[in-house]
Amino acid sequence: MDGIMSKLRNLDAYPKINEDFYSRTLSGGLITLASSVLMLLLFISELRLYLHTVTETKLVVDTSRGETLRINFDVTFPALPCSILSLDAMDISGEQHLDVKHDIIKKRIDSHGNVIEARPDGIGAPKIEKPLQKHGGRLEHNETYCGSCFGAEESDDHCCNTCEDVREAYRKKGWALSNPDLIDQCKREGFLQRIKEEEGEGCNVYGFLEVNKVAGNFHFAPGKSFQQSGVHVHDLLAFQKDTFNVSHHINRLTFGEYFPGVVNPLDGVHWNQESPSGMYQYFIKVVPTVYTDVGGHTIQSNQFSVTEHFRSADAGRLQSLPGVFFFYDLSPIKVTFMEEHVSFLHFLTNVCAIVGGVFTVSGILDSFIYHSQKAIKKKMELGKFS
Image (cartoon, rainbow, N blue to C red):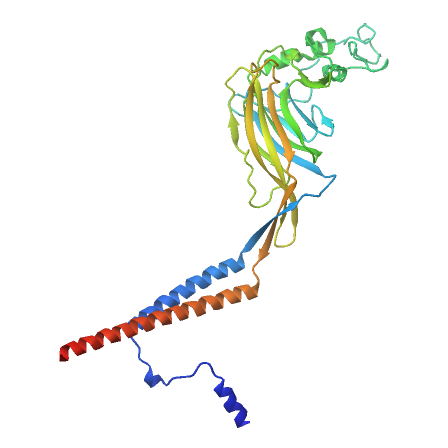
């Protein structure tokens, strides 16, 4: 047993020296104090890194199919009334959403940006007690109302009872409604009068769109939209205006859910129109993004970059449609962010490296200073004797 213990003592890599042989110096004390403070600071820094998560970023090919893209928006138009502003969305697959009304809210605002109390849907209020029937006579007592579509009927029993119904019927036919005062429903509801009353007002539009995950565009523009000879156009004749101010302020625009660290470059963007009319275009490149937090919760979202361009109404031969257009395309590369904790073994290794490294370097420095002082002192003593 004693032999085994003796062999173990021979393996000791840290031989002990009697304290009587220690020589403590002032420089050694200062170095010990400085190295201790340095070790403490480095340990605190390493502990903070261990307690906080780190995010690992990867780029992979996006192989997802058949998904949808959610577009959240909040845009203010200080010079376009809500009654003439419409929202359309379309993509390269041919799917169209014209004059979108669901999942969006419009708020009328005055010239100072204050919200005006919302009115019920529809324009104006009935002014004629007996509307014009489809057969030509006025609505009589105990008679069911069926308004004329003024040539845009889809079938014999098709009725247009409101100005909006007539405008929708004309839109489906690809016709423009040139003079609403000639339409009984629009005259009765005060269509043009309502537009004149809202002159000088603005509109705040916010909500979301759910579209196919393919390239496409959505735009805010005045008037009802329809297809004419395969071209997307808006009916602006009904408003009897020559110019439209599409100045706008983008309060928020996102493609998907929020995740930590996301930067939306269009948030807070403001643009004032200087020319009489024109088309403002944003060209957006959407990058699919997956964010996984330290708890394993995954957020499917998107980031995007953007460039912008303004087309004046008098630029070129073809007159551009006044409005704000967002053209988006999707990147084939997906970015993944994954939050991770530093492992305890990694933390322990770094702490040992800090302690050992500082202890070794400070020992070398102390030894250099000690032997330097000793050599200088010896030379000084030799100089005295000589």
